Image (cartoon, protein in one colour):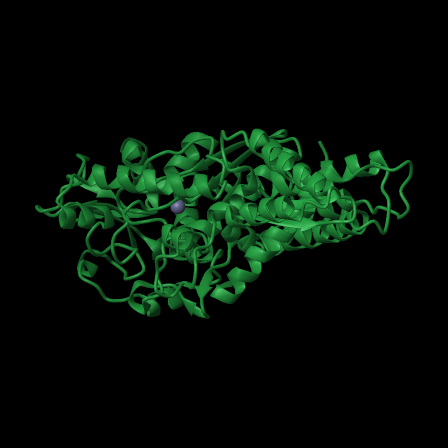
Length: 491
Ligand code: ZN
């Protein structure tokens, strides 16, 4: 299989031709959510970015095994080694069993992903289901001399590792920076060096999420799960590891160190990271009052939102930017994305209603080739959308009666939209009412009413003609008279 897909590798800091280790199989691991709160915009961007990659690789003919984990233990409040476990804390506050919290928010996450038309991964492993694999990983690192036991906890020896292998190559940091930037927190006494990170933590008496191990009753460090589960499901070496840029350090840097310290080399061939989102130019954060959940976007129930935004508006907006660029959410930008999505859908609907002529009066470019070229250039989804808008211009020209298209050209355009807009970008036509709703009978009923209106107009029965138009308007339909008849859509 040959392809010309170039992707940006965070590790080498350049675009590289994508070549899987074992064609036609591709192994892809993406860090999933820590399930202790409602899914928000920060979850939408990586899931959509890597959903598009997953879809595009399959479009190219690869067999992709896509692993996206659920973090349900070990992610502590201060990200690294200190503070209460995020899930255990929520469980304590809500007086629930931690796994009830994990299940509840996993379900919420799945609902949001479904709404955003994000395909489920091939495997969705839970950290709590892989404690044994994580303990084995910790033991290997201990056996190789890159970790030490201290007071029942196990820490990674960053200084020793740095002597033999360079620590910090993904994030571009060196050990001194890391030491200087490490906060002094409780538990630091157990560590030989501030930069060391926990592989296994001994559980305090009040800590309820705990498992037995040879070192103590405790729980794995956050970074262990992705190394252990990636290896279990994708092998010692696999193609792609992705996540948000905020995970480069410390999470992914530590994953590389764990991998090298346990098996002698890197597991991952290409590291990919999506950029972050901001809201009105500010980083999203609970303390800034701009923390907006996806459900709040979908319903408009947040004081910063002027209206509700559909999941497809959110998806379209995210895809209008390159995944390595920042995206700033503002009401203005989202309203513009909503209009753009509608314009695109209008183009698609008009394309389906176009009447073919014997020949095309204008040259139709190879839009599919341009979309492929854009995708091959490190997933330039913004360029794919711009190309499809160029195709919409041709469609509108024909629709307005200023040009003609042959059946073959119409079919080619339809195939291009089907492949790139729907299959690869994963945009969904919401006017069809979503899943499992057959709208054909309703469409036929509206068409019938408008045919009757046409007859009424022809008979100069203005009262009936106006009545049909006004009542359809009240019901939420936009009716437009055109040269050959009428056009309608749901507002
Ligand atoms: Zn991870």
